[in-house]
Image 1 (tube, rainbow over the protein chains, first blue to last red):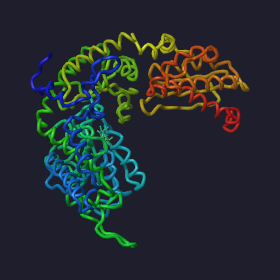
Image 2 (image 1 turned 90 degrees about the horizontal axis):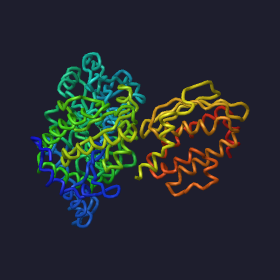
Image 3 (image 1 turned 90 degrees about the vertical axis):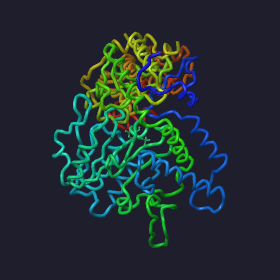
Image 4 (image 1 turned 120 degrees about the vertical axis):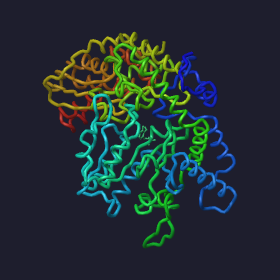
Length: 418
Length: 155
Ligand SMILES: Cc1ncc(COP(=O)(O)O)c(C=O)c1O
């Protein structure tokens, strides 16, 4: 087996993920390379979810009985875990949502309904980038349409990076919010946060970071990022679906208005008006995804025990190996940075003029799961003049053998359509 | 191998040597996309009364969607609207069969090369690819012959 410096003990780790033992299509080993879409769930998280439902299930924050107290302690305990995982100054800055999309929509709606100085209106500008996931494009398009604000964006360079050469014209005194992806889900690019944050701070704009592809794969320190909001999603980091996080700076969360109204988010209610609970509860209307939050807490325990710096080193080694091996495949063009520098473990490519749908289908027949299409980032495909890509994405349980299987599989694809 | 049931020779042939590709003169033009994968087609229909003079198209997409457009062109051009609708409905039925319908002789007579897509109906993610051009044709026909008119004829 190929040994690379920095790899984790995948033999041990893979034992934690029952699904990786599955055989598909008449006995073929499952080679799961769709981790950027969703990650697999370790036994440790599955057990915690089971135990929650078998032993502790109740609604939170509103009962005096044993189960309600246990469920509340588990749910709020998960908040503590998230806060520690991202080095948040306060646990009250961690808002649970159902996914990253909801987190980003929440920020857009807070700003749309806010008073000065945060208010986004016809006199102001919103800045995003051309490499955003649709979840970080559409909420801002909606906000722009509803308020009359102008939506601007950074374009991309030919090698898959943000073109910041005109940063002073893109981010101006009129900019209220700059929202961008930390690691691109389609290109794999790791973006230069510091340069963007510095310019945003110069003009007094808020910064929102979509960390959906960062939180699962590298140490995430919201204080070091110096952003105002950070969004991510549980199901890409060994957690269950149905749970996301929005971290926001405390004073902002105090000042900004709620978006969804309902139970849990209030202090007092009369028929004429209501007052709101302090953050984070102000932003968590209704019964939250309790088991899912608890599951995310377990996922964080799992990842932290391994160490996010080691996960990052593992994926970096794999990415280097993958870039090298993929470059040996004739007619393969990587869409995104061509080296492993400042690059995450999602690699998009085209294979001659064989459509990604066909590539994915023939790979699937060999047990290799990749993602094909525009990966909810259609503007990137338009930018590079391609209809779609095939994307392989790795995680802490991925191995060099998985990459070898992919390369062999691609050879098979070329023969099939050759 | 199971893959061969999807990628029949006939399909790969149409994919590599498409019939009637390219945009020509038409009475109506539509643009349809398959949002899950980015397949796109621009399709024009040209009618002579209720006879289909031409179906021309341009698009990008996987082998299934491209081959399907080629088969559509081959099957429908020259046909009368009523007959074409019968073919379209039969194809739709086959594609929505989840692999359960074994095409009989009657169906083969109607669908000819399009019968080769039977295997595709087992792959839910690919059914939309196969139907893209057919839905576009239906839409373009409705526009060309006037919405209400075409609706009545379809009903
Ligand atoms: C960069 C990025 N942002 C946002 C999202 C949206 O995540 P979710 O679908 O969990 O809301 C994804 C996931 O596909 C992503 O990769």
